[in-house]
Length: 124
Image (cartoon, rainbow, N blue to C red; front, side, top):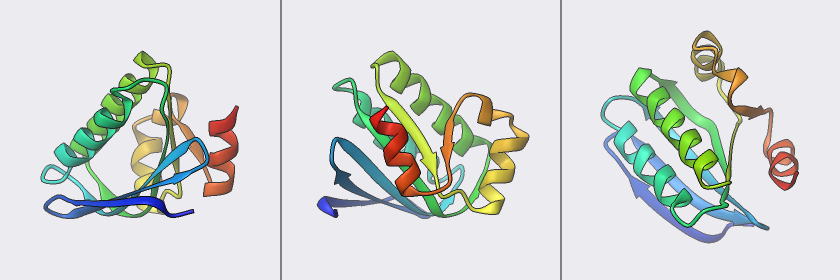
C-alpha cells in the first residue's frame, strides 16, 4: 500500500505521498501553520495540475492548523474542483476538527473518519 513513497519537509511539517489504487494519499505530520502552509499548498496544487486526481489528505498526524493552513486547504479544494478531482480529508485530530468545524468548512470538504471510508468516498 505504500507504493511510490516520497517525503517532503517544510519548516514544521512532513508530507509523505503514497498510492492506494487510483487514489493518492498524503500523510501529514506536524503543525500546519504560517511557516508550513506554503509547502502544503504547493503539494496540493501540484497533485491537481494534471487533472482528475483523487487525493486523500491524512491529517491524523497534524496536531494544529491555523488560518493560513485552512487557506491552503481551501486552495487545494478549489484546484480539485477546477480539475474535476477530489480532495478528501480524514483522520482529523480533535484540534484540527474543531478549527474545520468552527470555520464551517465541513459544508464544503468531504471529511471522513478513517482511510477506509476516505477510499470509498474517492471511488464514488
